[in-house]
Amino acid sequence: MSFLQNLIHLAAATSNVPDSVKSTVKTLPDATKGTFLTNALNLAYFAAGIACAVMIIVSGINWIVSSGQPDKVKKAQQTLTYAVVGLIIIFAAFAITRFVLGAAG
Picture 1 (tube, rainbow, N blue to C red):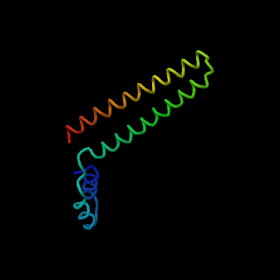
Picture 2 (tube, rainbow, N blue to C red):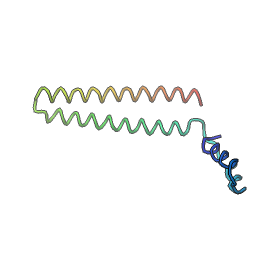
Picture 3 (cartoon, rainbow, N blue to C red):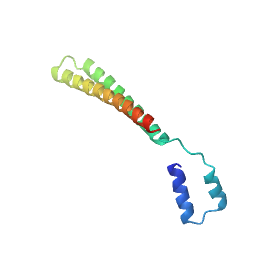
Picture 4 (cartoon, rainbow, N blue to C red):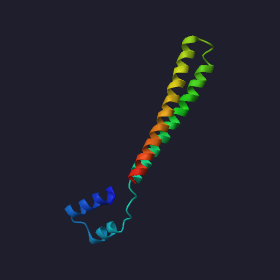
């Protein structure tokens, strides 16, 4: 039973809920294990991937407009390095959670 169904059953047991609502709750489909978690993680990975892509673009632009100034070039290189490392971490986290959720489901 899903979390939502458990919550509705708990609410129905502790309050005056019409029988029509109780019968509707019984007909709700059971969600696949981990569906909510999988969707939430996919959304988080997508958002983090977009953030990394934006940072890679920003670091490239900063590198181009640095005009060869060593401190600005170094800062752009560090930003690029951190963004790529972040992207690698995102891919690793994605693979690990896919494996764990796949084994649990």
